[in-house]
Image (tube, rainbow, N blue to C red; front, side, top):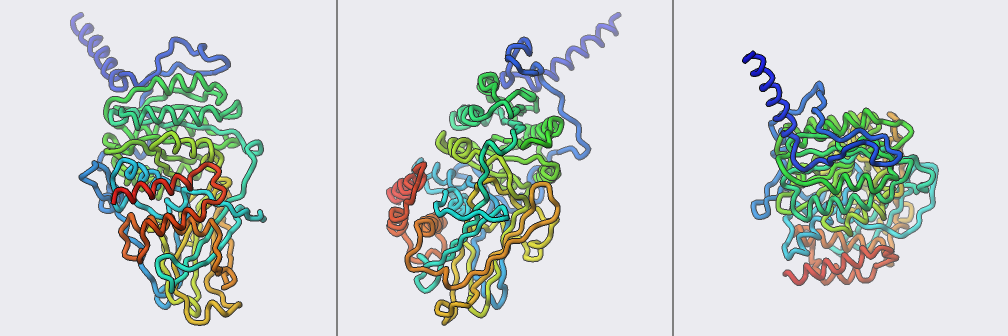
Length: 524
């Protein structure tokens, strides 16, 4: 009898400990599944972690650690950036890189400057700054997912050189012509998410997204702290109040089982996969995966595997003082995910309202760019930004090479500075360089190629507002990085260029950039 009592007591104790491991207030307590009308919903209870064949263990950062830089002043960490240098076309006339729309860096440096601080050098990724903004020139559609616009003008860094502006515009598709979305929210509820700029801002941000969903959409929610749990499973998207009641009930506490959270989210998204819908996981975190995550490489492989099955990922970074930007940038770079940073509700509005379609719906996968310079007319070149996106030139034609996903209606801009040889500007038929874009149609395994030769007729002394504004953002990035290639550019030059190139500025982001530069000038 004593033995039986002991066994029963042991079983109860183990059960209590198992529940308490995912216990606390990061769950949404409900009495029945019938409280949400027309919702087929399981009562959210702590779920055991799904078992996977390649489990995630504990040696954090693995091979990526050597590329990460810890900032002792803020407790934040960033990937080290070795700024692109000038390259002679006689040595290497071609440069290749992946195209992807990440905007995290711009919002992050905005947060630093608005808090009266100069951002860490490696937090400044110039390509992400340029790609934060929308551009105005209307490009005619064609038979491919992309239209390409090019323009050259005098370089703000050196009047003897030229600056090239290349804009790749993805085709627009009306929301009514797009399928519904099968969304899985993966929310970090660990203790580090407690401050107002993390979980509370996350909850407000997701409210903007949820109110734009309808009956065609479904929402599932996975949370993770000490371990991972399924909070909601396949709730119709038009049940806004029910979904937000669950999200708003979350509280931050405990450690950070980021690896099991990602695994659980993928398992749930796979279980609920709908080939007729847009299947996407939205991960919201400060990136501090301090429990259960071993190898970023394993997470990247997991993302790649599921992306090939049709499940994409968006990464949202929150918080300051503990931001692991390096982790999120690494996962996004190698795992085909978009990475955005949310420091204000305005930033969330841009992601979830202004650019909702672009950020949810993929029009092309594994998108990469290659620029081949003609050594007869171009002496040397310098790619601006994209340092952590460059690939070997031989990988450009490799259909097995993972690269970036591009959303419907997106703008992707890249810029480079070039030194032309004598006579290039005055020789009309001189081919200066060739822009090549290679991509996969979603779900296809064979890539398509777009090629556009660029001649001197694209050089102008009266540049568009798009060109000038992008150049002003690039120039500001050089200042923030204290770049050796910045020439004599200063904040006065940046402000003059930006003020003269406001364009349509429908949502006021260009004006906000001017205010940001003015704020930075006051810090100097």
